[in-house]
Length: 436
View 1 (cartoon, rainbow, N blue to C red):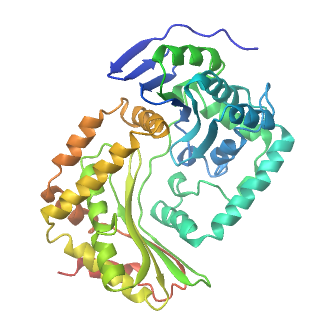
View 2: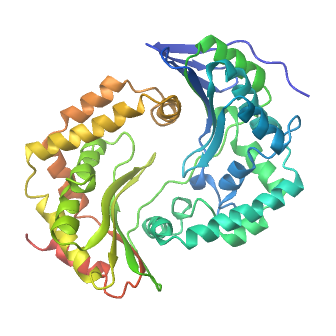
View 3: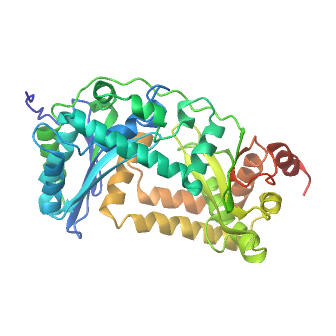
């Protein structure tokens, strides 16, 4: 039985084309009007992912993502797919460490259908036993595929080495044993406990009105549970080493350090450091390790910020014979960057980061996801001008200070493949601490 919708929209804030409403139920609705497009993206972003799972539940958020479009009280799995594809729409979902998302992109006139489907799967999924078993097999295939893809699974090994024995370190997909154990009741219980109005942001972007979205949310999300959810355990970094000898053509290496969380003062300097070190073909690591020395096919750096912690890391894929040289050469570059940064390369890094941000604003899907995530992380939508201003304000001194701080902390190493010649943590730390 559906409850009657609550028509009071509670507190509201407005920022240009962006409007935010805090509903009495606890739901937050955020929209961005984009008049010059013909599409809309509509999604439900649940602040629950891998880090919210117990050890026994590891992988259940990802399992729920897979079950999202497998049937409701009103729709079969085929019916869900046909309804949205009959109007040319696209629906999808993803699981991350701190979030699970369900979203649809459609033509603007089909927004009511998109909201109906997302609301239906979040409040009236049936978890048909046959569909559960069928999807269990699909997920086991996905885990097997990940294990057979070394340049994919290496990041799971790195994450576990950085956060050992913690929810933050466990794989998003879960393990085969855990996935085999999940039953219909466990899936339903987890969804009831974590997929609640106090843990979910409804976001929409495109050619729409905020009032229309509010009406749709009132109609289709009235049955969502309103209970509070338990806080996730903090992520505590402990640098360790993972090494697996495997018969492969390449060694896959990830070397990382504890990085800043969202909102940390070092967030933007660290992002620019990652970009100038390994963010493109003109970056220091790409030029020195690949172009000048030919030691790798792929090398790049990345940041992984979370609510309360983060990671800064670099990935390299190299041959067995070259493995012994790649790490020392790479560490030399980490030392060099602490000696000085040219204003031209910092300008180039700023341009790359700003371009990536501004280009993403042209997509309704990216904007929908971005405004939802900002609400969950910062409690507000961050104006683009504010973000650009922070990027432009970063100085070379701030980047140098971040580099010195990062590269004198406890590193984490993950290596997969013919890894016998990859230097261990002790030698890496020794070289990092040597005067350059």
